[in-house]
Length: 378
Image (cartoon, one colour):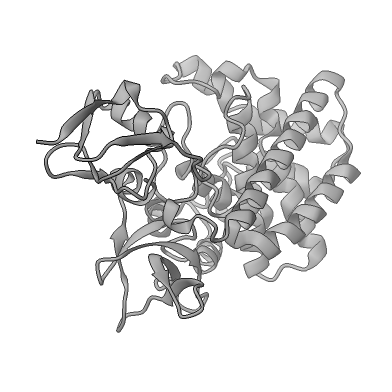
């Protein structure tokens, strides 16, 4: 009979000498995989008391970065860490930019453009790794969710703009507009957008004023009109049912059409205090349906073809039963991205990647959060 181990007595990073089970059949980890802190948290949240193994509990081991599955440890790890660092540095910049604008009523737009120019280069060269960052690298910061949403929206907007082959000066304008599109939030109490509850009707009305607040703020800073308008219009919709002006499609600026899609995708696929994220495939499919014709069709097409229907970073089940992670896209076939297979290598020891296809190995579906948490990551 297997020995039971109290979960609360197990240190993160510990190794068992034999397979670890949740019950008589459900495998949690093999002897090669340390028990991670995230796994222990999940088990505690599910109110499990014990796990079981025929092996002995070893000393605590150094674990890999939480966002990198053990199967990928050492594979692309440096690039992932650099991507996480980009988020941290840029989040700090956005937080400082917003707080300075709020406290001193000033904004250095030339510096914004310089930062966006750098960001454009990094995004175009490293989008494969930036798109694999799922979690806010600065969750402890009160306004961290706002700055993370800002950065993620900017990355998606620049990827869309690059796919649409916008010239450099227009890509810079788009990136600056994305960076500033939520600046109106700084004129509202943070409790209205950092919350774990349903807003009251009055609070909802106040949130709906942030595009106008942002537009007036940018005008006072002499920010170019093309960028200020995006702050005002990023919640307008093609069908005229957006806010604050209920503009129809032909009245909405093109940058605002792009950022409406980027902002919506970022919101759908990011955990927020009041809601859980959808996986990136579900987010893409929701926008692709384009219910009530809310979004510009050209921009939606650009999103799908640049991210694919199974976006980079998504963990997937393959038709041959293996698990993997989407690591790149085929812009000609958005339904068949490139997948890195867990545990697979080629003759020189490099990780096995394959181009999914209709006639060969294909993606069956995304892995559920439970499958990712208990099978892939641990």
